[in-house]
Amino acid sequence: MAMAATQPTPSSPARAPKKCVVDKTIHTTLPFFIEDNETLAKSARLTPSASDGISPTMERLHRLHGTSLLLDAATLLCLPPSTYATACTILHRMYHRISLLQHCVWSMAVACTLLAGKVEEEPRTVRSIIMTFAHIYRRRRLRFGDDVGKYSYGAADCEAVTSALLVNDEKENILRSVKPMSMGGPVYAEWKDILLDMENVILKTLGFTLHWIPDSHPHKFILYFVRVIEIESKEVVQEAWNYCNDSCHLDLCVHYDPEVIACAAILMASFNNNVELPLLPQPWWEVFIGPNRNAHLSVVCNSILAVGNENELDIRRSKYAFVPSLMEEPSFNDPDSYLWSVAD
Image (cartoon, rainbow, N blue to C red; front, top):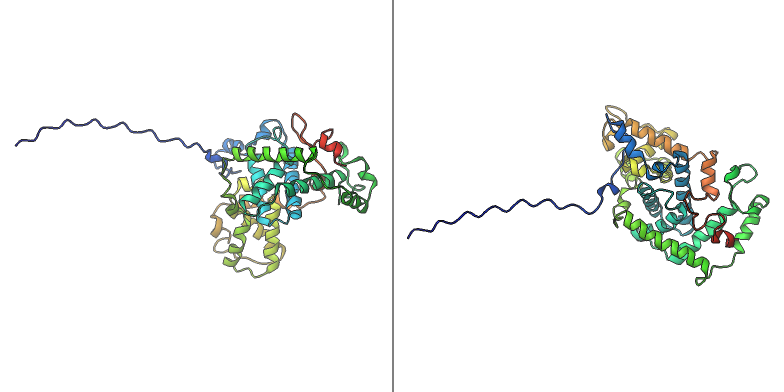
């Protein structure tokens, strides 16, 4: 029996590929160098703050100030170096997505500390973080640890009126005599609102994906690299580790792969300790980061070395003083704010 001819079914139209709802540029590296396309390279370096008219020097000052707050908080909260590095990475990534005119580094630093603790499984309570930053706030206004007589920031000084008249021992007594903050008071509520609001802003801005950050620190590569090139000097390893810590103050983590930063740290540490590393048949760093990366290494080395110059006023100011925000409306702890008036 003959089979009935079947009508060919029309082929279904090709489905359009689904669009990814996550902005993948959030986690990509924004290179300083793009061969044969300097215009594209400049656009990669242009931050939202720069687009709003903030000078590179001023943006650098606020990044240094924010990361120095994170370092103080990590020290007081006994957080490991990896947690501090994660907090710095979050801060730098955020300021490549938003402007300093929108959010100040103080609110950013408080929230970055909370989130970094969660990501690194080293959580600290909201109360302990608030108490820590309130203490740092008082220290910065007093310029505790700074040589007030030797260094002056001119009109930029925002310390308490009496700080110039006190020595460090007297400032320490003032800090110790401060009464504990009440969790039911308006000051604690102000800090807590800022912390929780900024945490939500960070998560939304970075797409709720922070799990990748701990594996992208240059610290993790140093120990592997020194084994491969057979560096036995503990001094070299420790100094390279310190250089990696210094790199956290700048947004190098946004522009360079962690392997490049790790190689730059080892290069400087080995040079300082007169440790010769193989340069033939090819430089040792090419094994880890590939050829034609000398310019990258040079920029990273010079940037890290500049951070270590404590004679530079911006470095000292970011480390010891209080730097007012650049927000169009005053920040929650700027001079003349409620927290400023009740901090003493």
